[in-house]
Image (cartoon, rainbow, N blue to C red; front, top):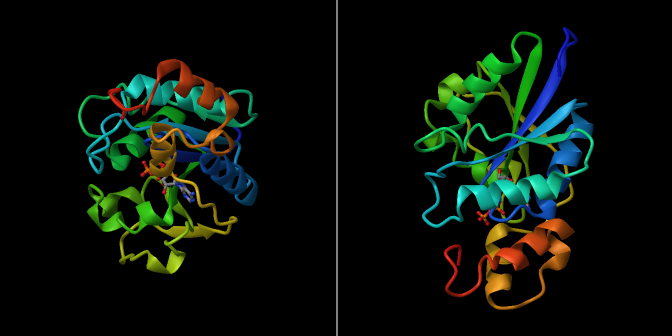
Length: 204
Ligand code: ATP
């Protein structure tokens, strides 16, 4: 990622608890639709919107394992290594400084998360750093997203609707129902080896 050529980088933030196949599909669709050079997966450190979440290193490892070997995918520890609650604006400011001039950033979100845009920290400042790319999700359409003048530009990308959520996967693991087709194989192995989401485990 060095040199002076113009770069286009997608940023897929998430809890990744666990990383699942919809994450991979979204990243692949947006990468192709917007001709991105790279999609950076950014696991959150302390997701302020969620009460229960697994330890950051497990979520980071699952994201590394789930993206492993896919050209044009990378994982960043930027939010995990920053103390305190995770705000997208802080991440975009840091990534803009890191990648420097000549890089366009695209923050990728599901329509469920984008519908909460009004609750994000200093959302009116975010547009200076990135465009927000939205993906519809079962139960959440692009039209559900409320935006206001001064908020970042929204760019809807059409992708197949995918009825996969980390919440459902955690429930399946706990109930010993099948979930292996919903996550990359190395992620399923990691969940089993670490005993994640089982009754009594810290992540359950
Ligand atoms: P949980 O069920 O725990 O809330 P999740 O499945 O939404 O988790 P996250 O890691 O929180 O997974 O998601 C990261 C990003 O990917 C968010 O912007 C979310 O909206 C988006 N996303 C996740 N699953 C889908 C999906 N099936 N379709 C579209 N977007 C999705």
